[in-house]
Amino acid sequence: MDMLTGDQIAAADLTDWRKLAQGLHARYVVDDFGTGARFVAATGEAGDALGHHPRVSIGHGYVDFTLISDDAIYRDGEGTEHVVEWVTQQDVDLARRITEIAADHKIDAEPVSVSHIELGLDTAHSATIAPVWAALLTGSADSQGRGSPGDEIRDATGRVPNLWFGDADKQKPSRQRFHIEVYVAPEVAEQRIAAAVAAGGTIVDDSNAPMLTVIADQDGNEGIVCVDVSAAKKD
Image (cartoon, rainbow, N blue to C red; front, top):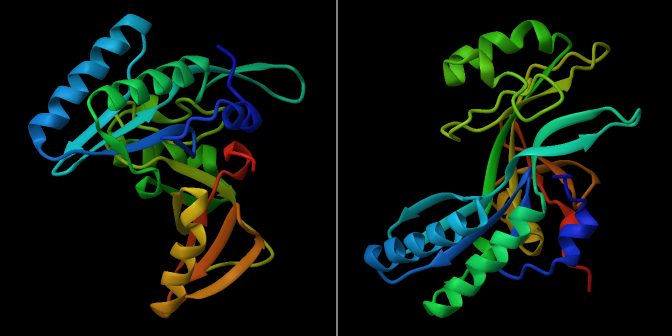
């Protein structure tokens, strides 16, 4: 299936879900583990019916879902097709069904609590160093370029955060090449940034805010608060 644009995802009006990085994310609050397990079982049956399933994490008081298609079609500027990990219509359809199941089970969503972590590494030699990081992070050479048109490292089972490669500025060497990206729901981005600043952090670059806000700690280590504004519901 074709990957969906941000506008298409926003138009789907998935109230329980937020688009973070490549996928749709939702958190549901449950009273106990048994309730969560029954909820997951019901969503599994729905996934069987649609031929598509979410990634699920369950713990004390919550059930987290991630919906992403590993065979989405992306067309670059020259019209060449690439198979990537992204949101497609089947993710939207299953998201709606999970929302319905949650309502049936009287389980509430907590969309402001979703988050997603990725790693970034600035380099001028991604093709050269990517095999090393694929081996270190996942133990599999197949994770290099998986679900991405580039050298990005993605574990098929989601055990570790994705690692993407950014362009290093050769004219401006940096002592920090690794960055942590924290994807959050649009409505909590300002609060997250304010909390980091209140804790002693400094806003280094907000020229691309609210999509990207670079924050440094007291030692100069940088992290990035990320928001997918293209997929956010328009008022």
